[in-house]
Amino acid sequence: TDPLVEPQVIVLHGSGADGLMEFGTGKFVSQAIRKAYDMGWHPEQFIGSIAASVAASLKPAGLEKSIGVISASHLRDPSEPGADQDPEMRQWLDFMKTKYPEGDPSNAFTIFGYSVAMAVTLALRRCGDDLTRDNLLNVMTHITKFRVPVLTPGASITITPTDYESIKQLRLRRFDGAKWQSFGDLIEE
Image (cartoon, rainbow, N blue to C red; front, side, top):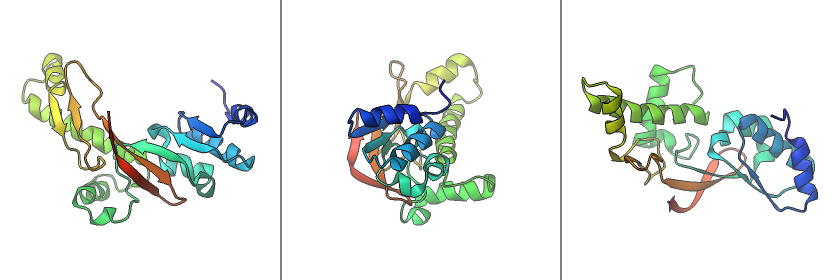
């Protein structure tokens, strides 16, 4: 409920911590990144995927202040080199141009929304004419290795009746001041 996180960043800096895990939303992550930088504190910073949008979080914090921040994602980044030439990313970028031209392709929320819409579309198509709650739940809990084009290579959606966590593959990435750079192998749960 605090309107600012700067006081917590000051306390953490004073503790001698060399790592900062920021699992808030965009505004608060932006504040934390900016405050740490402005104080001259450069801990290893990790942010949750919900705040890993360059447009919504890192740009407001200051791109130069965000250099080195680490996150993990199951989604691709439209700013990655060659994204506009990759067939899977091209499909999404074409969608953005034709269906949502006023949308910002650099905002991670647009690519996230597209990925969710692809999964919902699959489920609704599989429901056919039986659009009851029970049938939708049955269809949604029997999705196996569905590949959404904007997922990181190797990632897919699987939902079962006993496990609703749909994506279990992530890739670590580090912000270089302009875009996310993936590193390491695909992490699987």
